[in-house]
Image 1 (tube, rainbow, N blue to C red):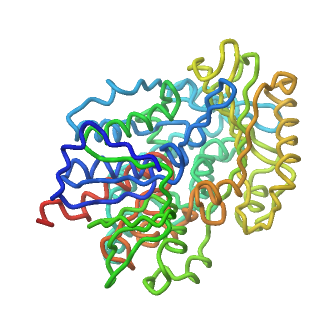
Image 2 (image 1 turned 30 degrees about the vertical axis):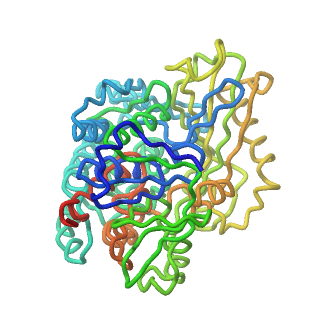
Length: 508
């Protein structure tokens, strides 16, 4: 068992209340920082041998791979964490703006460079769908409204009471939040290609554009307003910086420390028992573990009247992911940092993934090439890549032990036919993750990459609350609670804790 006690640990006195944070993803690290600032002694427990959770870093044969998140779209949230600690974010992390944000490639070979330059965006629309220029402007206004009402006003609202939900219904109606995102986009633009360009974003956080609420239109405005960024050194450099910030406040990180059970007595969380048998007591427990896994596997059923086994198993869950990490012994300078390679179907493929739980033969891909901006992530003259395909979660019954290699080969063939001709001869290292790995390695319920599906009936008050409905003293952060998945969402979930967890002095 690895314990890291930092030089700042003297900031946390033995008399201060103790908070345990389960998991060191972005939500858990942000929660640890905020609790430390407010006077708690904080211990972060991580199952893996290094922090990050879904943002873990793989290093293999001289190549560095960010396991999951690759982009930063709300740097102001990170600035805020550093400011709380009396420091400056830019002193510790070098963020670089992406140009373009994404390059989308359609099945017929057409491309669309999605960027933060308003004139360039209009030029791209003029090129593929000039008749939709006015509609695009209307969509931008709808996106700005969704951002103002859905993110600025509702993002860090706790939603602990049904009255919280009732209060925002007028705002939801104002931003047409009861319809799907794709429906909202389709109301403004007629080109199927442009509809895809303006609606694909939820796929990056496990949502189906045809079922997520139109509130997710806010992502477009968020990107245009704050940009899309990448951290030099990879997203792992940001994880390391957050760990260092948390430790400067006296928090302790313990890796190789898997939690077996959240201990509950008289309806209140009392601490945790580790798989090793060690018991740690706490005044407050914050779970950054997968929300469904937290309730289904970490809390005995007799302590759960709301999140029963039946309720969890009848819920809808996000897509799974198939991720192939590979390094090449040559560079591909014409491939941008972020590419979206669309297959021959859009809605049909999404129906297969989200509704039919069927692994189709075709797929759409997200291709990440961080070495465009940061060559240090690969040996000299080489490129680091990962390619990601949304797939059904494990309820599909897919035998990934048998299907993983054929599926990888199909992706390899598709990449060679499109943007990386002949690259298979230059592969120097390779690593694959399937939904089975998400389940066993990350303890993701049903192998889902993003927990509960972010549709209307599983959003805000309907999502697992940041304050546990079942256990006093238990709080949730991360993708499975409010406001949802993605780095901005999980960091904001930690911000909600400031409103719902008592200040440390209340325990005195």
